[in-house]
Image 1 (cartoon, helix red, strand yellow):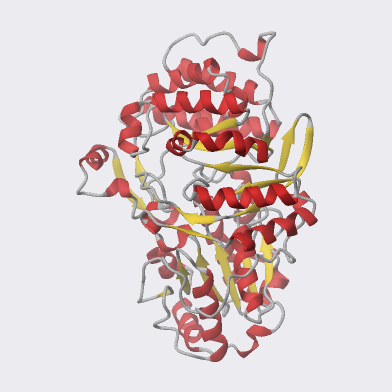
Image 2: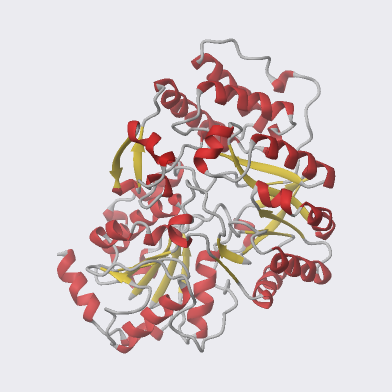
Length: 509
């Protein structure tokens, strides 16, 4: 039945796509932020004369009446969790509206195109997706041939990600549209000095210059990045400040890939909104290379920086081709602390090459360097994801050979390769600490309490006595600025994220 419906969808002209609600863009998860992954294409589609609707299942219920009216649904999948949730959303869409066109777009779309097109999607777009998405909608609305659209994959024709601005060359960049999105107060807040503030979310660039071997950006962008026009980014910031944002998160994979572009934006932002604070993500090597910029960034309102530290083991860092060493991380911590900017490390402690000793030492280092409150507990649970197309699978690189003894089959339905740690204790420990972090998050436990709990689990796995609990000591480090959403792009979706969609029966829709 699916193939028959799919054939009719592919050839049908949809003259009603310009009516309000005929196009729906769906976001599944963007780290607790109001989703830029649908705000940007909403702006492009509105600029082209369409009137799309939006649905963010991270904060909204699945909406059958809205879906029943749609002729085209685009599902944004910028990360692993979003893709896992997005497939279930697509299944619900098929149940509600079997003839609807479904397009997956975003970072995780193109690397999983074969599975998506074989099972649930009509179209897949990766890379710089806005212009191809508009071109696809135009072609469907006008009844034109869709088989050769640049950057658009369909069943029987899988193309690579879009690494240039294609299709509608005369169309200028559009300001992201947020009119149909839930209000900012429904999303993550900045927690600072006991108060909470609304947070906006923008992108100044997409892609990355670097080729860290475990990063999902690499199979798509392969060392390239694209900037958004300065005035477009600033206009998006203005709109979010008007909507109540007191803080801006720059969602770029690395804000310092193009430091001239980034600095021009935050300088202009500070001139216009001197009380507005912000955070961004940058590599350790960029923080060291551009250390001269850090004091100015602090003056301009930067509160914290997220950096993919991943590991303190130099052998693991070399395997991942991170471009930094353990000593570089410690140097960056000192530099950031001297400028008054908090460094919030992200970690991948569970890899085939990390040992139980590495994991135990991680807790010691976090405590010694005053990072307990700067490391979100989920970071202690991150297990290496190996998606289709991962650079870790490259047979031409000797570093990939170590995966041969642990690498299992491709689990296409979960969009990753299975692997088992050479030390079975590490796999058991991963399950234990993941459950403990989810339980702690549900209970609202403090980071230091979860830290002690995880450290005790790790020492028990090693057959050792854990150090005295940090939470019981009289002197504890102050809590640095943070966002209230602590989950992470490379984490597996939680039961609480999956359950509402997987328990929804067809009778409910």
